Length: 289
Ligand code: PDD
Image (cartoon, rainbow, N blue to C red; front, side, top):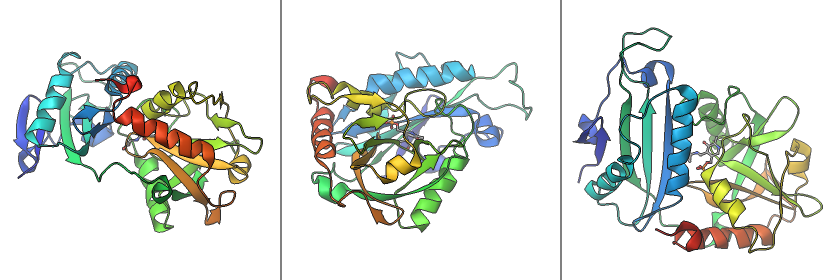
């Protein structure tokens, strides 16, 4: 069965799903996107993703391509036409639209909307098998990383460097020697004295939907979070490290630049949060349909 994509009002086989060569997403990276996880017909944190899309569009002054209330229906139609019943992801992209190439916003232009879906491997059951390694490197992105824009060149280069080093991600270090996040995920540590930390929201990082959902799960676990940046040095000395994203969920990091994190095993807090997020994905009260 061929995959189906939604492009500006039409559901098309992927091979026929195309946008204009003058689309500003293609020419300038002038657009935004979202990636939403789907688990057995249930979207993880859908409202958070749609709220962030709304915010990203607003920050770039791109109007909604269709009514905001209509998008969930389009997403469901794409899922259904792709017969996606198990684990999958939805990719939503909105660009400013297509027009003769000029840097400034063209006067008469309607935004481009693309929605695609694809299957993902089964949700990880075993947290130890889900553990991974990362490397560290400079954060070379622009200054508004809070906007989920499709300008991902620095992220692409960081991910490629990680792949070539046999790692899954790159933790990005800013000009002050502090970690911002990873190339496509937020980064958390349990520091030397046992405090769970992740960088505070601001222009420097993407406000992750997984990050927000996880932050809400901490109280019942009796874990307190310090939204305080940590340095590269603190990362390397952390007791536990994990990353979060819509497709990584809670993913333990047990190796950094080839060296073990603490004793090289998944820590207790990471283990508990992995389990809590797994319940969330399966539809506990924090992610009820
Ligand atoms: N990436 N930081 C960056 C730079 C990201 O690109 C992402 C998500 C996150 C985590 O956000 P969330 O928890 O809402 O997925 C943090 C997606 C998955 C991607 O680009 O594929």
